[in-house]
Structure formats: C-alpha cells, structure tokens
Length: 446
Image 1: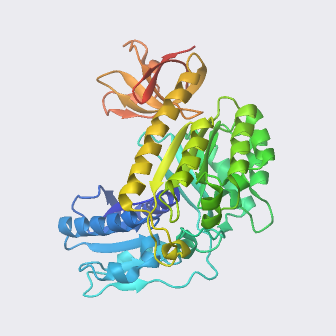
Image 2: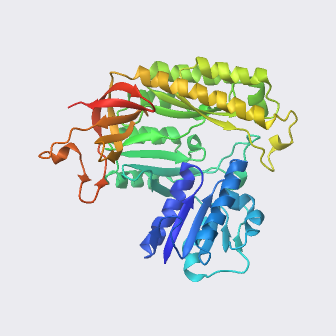
Image 3: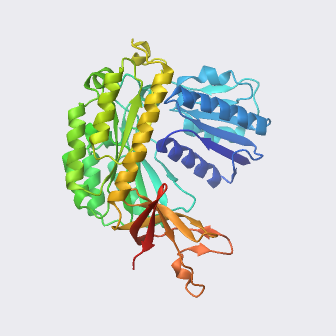
C-alpha cells in the first residue's frame, strides 16, 4: 500500500507522525510524498489556534482532491477536540483522538472507503505514554525525541490539556536505554521535546533535572538541544549544568507570552514578569553566548496599548535573541474566550508585526555578538551548484560555509555523494565572519 503523510503543528506532533510512518514502513507499506497518488493519506492535526484548525480542513480537502479514492485518516489535537467538524467533510474515512491515534497503523490495513467516517475519540483518562522520535531534516543529522506528553497547567487561552490530557513521561530507565541506543547511530544532535518538557517526571520519580545530569555525565557523542521549556521549570541547577557542559547546546526557548503583570495574571501563567527578567539576565551571566528564543502572544483579551508597551519594552531591553510572536486566537472551551476587552483583530495583527520587527533586530544583534567566534556548525544542506554548506551552530546561529572543493580530497565534503546527490552533514569547526541576510557567513577552522 502507498501511504502519504501530512503533519501540522509542533515537534511533538512531527515525532508522532514520523513514528507512525516508521511502523507502517516496517509492515511493508511504501511512503510517498503528500500530493502524489496514494492508497491512504494520514493527516496529523494541531489545534493551538483557529488558523491551525483552518489549515487542517484545507489539507484534508486538498488530499481528497488529489486522491479521491484513498483512505483518509485524520489524527491529532483537532481530531480530539472537534471530531464533528472533521466528520462533516465528505470523504474522510476515520478520525482518531489522542488516545487512539497510534491505532491507525492497524486500521488502514483492514479498511476501505467509508460512506460515513469511523470516529475513534474517547476521554483522556488513563492515557499511556507513547514514545516517538523523528528526523528533523533531510540530511538525517538531527533527531527529535519526545520524552513527555500532556500538560497539567491551566493557562486560560490554551486547549492543549483538553487535546492531550494530563502530563505523562517516558520511564527513566527506558529513556536511558533509548539514549544509549541513539549513541550508536550517526545522528549528531538530539532534541529533547515534550508538550511541557520541564514537567518531565518518570513513574519512578526522576525529574527533568535528573535527566539533564544523566545526559551530561553519560559521555554521549551527540550534542543535546532542549526544546521549549517553561520559565518556572528552568531551574538554576539546570542552567548551572548547561553552562559548564560540552554536551548541551547553549540555546533555550522560553515562553513569556506577555510582559504585563496584569495580563500574565489573566493568562494564569505561573511566573511574574520580574521573575522572567531575572531569569534571562541569569542565563546570560552564566552563558554569555546563549541563544534565547521567546514566545509572546499579542492581543490577549484586555490587553491595552499600555499592556502591550510593557511587553514590548521588556523584550526590547532584555538580551533575548529572537521572538516567536503569535496573534491571539479565541479557542472554544477556554476561559479567555469569554473574557471582556476583546482586542480588534487589526490591532492584534499590528502588534504582532511590531514584535516580529523587534525579533529581526534582536536576531541581528545576537548574530553580531557572535562574529569572530569559533563554533561548531552542523550542516543540514549542501548546495552543489554554489558549493555552500548551511546549517546551525550549537547556539542556534544560522550559518553558511562556502567550500572550496578539491577533486582529490573528497573528504572536504563529508558524506556527500555526487553521483546520488545525497548528503549527510558532519560537525565542522567554523569561524563566524559576516552577517549576510538571515545567515552568518563562516570560514572553516582546522
């Protein structure tokens, strides 16, 4: 059977659909690109915003136009929260909620097109933890490993706890075994991911700090990157370990959401703006070259110009490196959907644009601070025509390295085959020299 896949959403979503794909390939099925002729299409959805819901519906209809006779299976957060909406799309055959999504592996082998969709969506009680991992790029250099799922927080704008259930984690001994297995592979970077990663708590009691200590002491060959982590869960002990570690990347992505104390309180976030500010300065004091990304929401109900300016000014003065700015979107069944003080959509969007402009400035400032420093580039792409390697340093500087190819020294481009045009990047020491657009141009260091 030929099967195509489409993923919408976060790294956790991506790792889950990749794991489903791996399971089906092991059963002998062939994976094809989404949009090509296939016997089945599996679509993994997100529901973090209204746009994500809309994107899911568009992708489902696109799949139906391309493959009207294929089995169409829809999974993920949108499927869990709004199966009825998906069921109204003619041609959808099966809808799988959070608890049932991995059952699609067996379902598609025994089913054909349906006049009405099968709906497998149940409550989120007693959810098991499903391990998932995925390659992050075509050069097969980086792997994302899901170690935690669900969330116990009650942020007033968020549907994730309703879509994914309570926090649960990969057992510590199983995780240690997995990491040791990965140490025998050719991956050079492992990204630790979760819906609320810092909430990692093994059934046997080990927490995220215990995991960080284990990785730092285990003499693993990969470098490790921590995906998004809540500021209240990024403990001083974790920062201390990473500041001295040769294993962990100097890169954090930390949600702020608002710099206004009043809006943070309405959001029911678990920290204050002052705490966040002190955290950022503490990180930069201990890890001066650390890249710090920040999530921020604009246009939350009740956000006045004054509230927004508090957020903007805080981010403007802090030594953060880039922003992921989101326009607030009302989500059904969340407290914030009923809050007063609705911000007009055009005002929300204008604030988002202002934050994105600020992000560009912050990124350029950070890149400028890294010039004339030696870093380790993990190449992800090789442009054969321009003779350019591109990828990311350990502290998340997007880098290009121009290669002078000597026909007698094929090792200059490690693991590149000109005959098959295949490439697998290996770490290279580089000197960061010049900012050029979104990249920093580097030269190779021996």
